[in-house]
Image 1 (cartoon, helix red, strand yellow):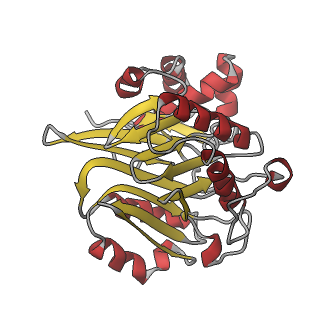
Image 2 (image 1 turned 30 degrees about the vertical axis):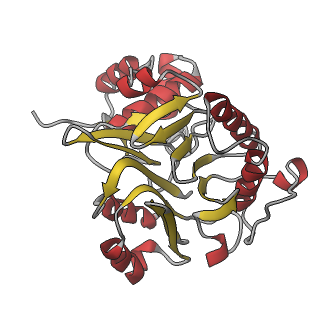
Image 3 (image 1 turned 45 degrees about the vertical axis):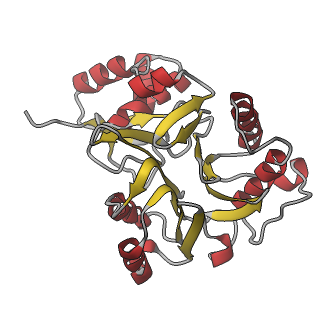
Amino acid sequence: MCELLGISANHPLKKISLFKEFKKRGIINPDGWGIGFYKKRSFSLFKEEKNILESNAFEKFIIKMPPARLIIAHVRKSSVGDNTIENTHPFKKILNGKTFVFAHNGTLKSLEHFFPLKRFFPTGKTDSEYAFCYLLERLHEISLSNWKEEHFNFLAKIISQINKKGSFNMLLSEGRYLFSYFDKTGFNGLCYNLKTEEKTKKISIIASKRLTSEKWRSFKFGELIVFQKGEPIFSNKRSIKDIIKSSEFIYEKQILEFLNSFKKREIKIKDILEHLKLPKKITLESLHSLLCKGEIEQIDWTKRKWNNINSHYKIVKNDG
């Protein structure tokens, strides 16, 4: 299944506590882990093909890791490619003198047939690294010295084309921007948390599942959000104001009212769809938003994807 973690900040981050929570995701993602980060003008990448829960190196790494402003981390459950270091995320490659790093969650098919490569080629055998190479092929076509909104829209279009070949959540960066994309069908989940510390310190955190007890916010299906220096600066689906404000998705109240009134303690997604008779996509987006906020929880998260119609949910009872 794999899980992603991305962090963008306007100041160097030290002793990142989120790593300890992220490590727990190795329970269902046992096939490797990796962390790539940018510090000042350089980039570092560390990864292993072993389970993060069994890694002594991980604990040593997070203790010694220098302060960083931009981070991409990944825990892997393999679907394409053997469990080797070459197939372990994140991947890095150089384009126009800049180090790009990429991590993917999902499975893509027939990429070689639809997206031929000319300049960049994978060193491993994953669909993920192939998609990364194709993204760089297309980014080679535009100027990367001065990104503009038209370039962000160009990237969103290319990502959407790749997404048509399967499930595609991804994090991408070249050191300045953190490009974060949520699959068009909502595969596996992606949420974000915007934080301000000491009035001026901005931090944006992106993860497949929320990693703290705070109310996180949901990406829209098929949404690319670009973060810079700890703040969102672009979305192909909504305004920056809406990203920051995080207005309720349209059916959140109806879903909560239904769950509260239902006699059973747990309920399946298919029951919500059958009883409320609401459009499936928007219902799932609303459900995912409630999940990111922590207002509901999935009981069987180790066995089923969040949007499986047989997944069980319940209301989170807040103290007081």
